Image (cartoon, rainbow, N blue to C red; front, side, top):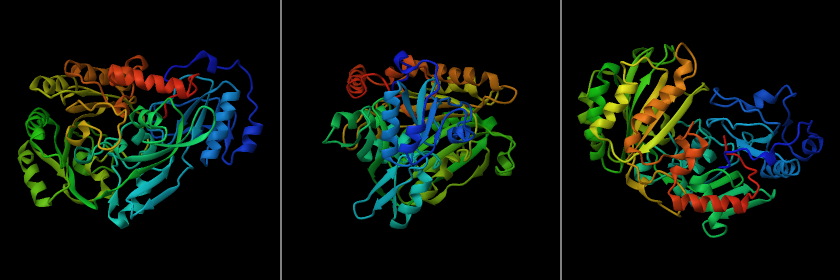
Length: 461
């Protein structure tokens, strides 16, 4: 997570000769003068456009190694980008490795494991695991890349029962600052393995991971959309109800400001709604009983709770499937008293004119509270909830998106318990170390210095 820009990695203004690099790698090598440069860098979050000096469209770990060696020889720092869901890397004078072409998938049904390349999204893996009744710990959207999601922790709607996705990783293949391809696990290179799982950035470019799969083909779950005017009642009922759930159930609640998009169900088009999300891995009849108390929380606009194949986990959160501009920031909180809910409603409730598309409160706890496999650097273990605000920097209030996102995070600051790295969003670089304990941050920083002494690697996008 080298989020600063060391001056030694900003070369003098000059034209870089990429001829030899282009001959050494199988994928494209592009500079800002090339016609395909912008297309190669396009990602899910359209709010920020990275501007590297060189882009390498890697097709393999060997391509990544060549790119890192070139960057080292030319005094460039290195970033990586798969789906572009994360914040754009700031600064100039760096080399970007795009990994979308690295789509290797190998599923071992007997061992219940999968090995995937750095460009694989959760939606790519599902067709290979579903026929065997298996699934990975995917997040709320299958358009997200598996590697970046997992290295940042990987919070799944099923996490309260099974932990973070990082808890299930067995091996990591990466290219380190010396341009060498390495494979690390909990035994060999365990300090690097620990730092990558939850620390995500600053040690190299990950090219593939191997992780355990779950023997789980279906769940009971989905969402209930309540009228926005009922936000106060729904959020306070949810605050009382959510902590009573068993670890086999997961839930979040979100205030949504939905666009007049004709692809949305008619009851939701152009509406402010409160979206209750719910998952349960046991008997559907028991799941319905667990959910029943919330069904009277307010007027229901739409509900889609049913038995779902795990490959259709997207139906729970119904996140936007395509690219859009956004600014976001999340934090973790210890507990959720009445005052915390009121604070969120005061700055983001339906009565506020706001560019916030989503303000979510998610229940944590259960298996998320401690590593479920090998030790790792995943943050937020002590938190009871996470709060996430996502604003759209477009439209009449677009310029205020960042301020409204900050207001939500500020409102719950009195109950702060750090945060989740994948939800950090626009958190200032100077504040990121506070996501870890002092001892964890010291260990993480020391491992990064040892494996990347000159700070070559930027955080992954």
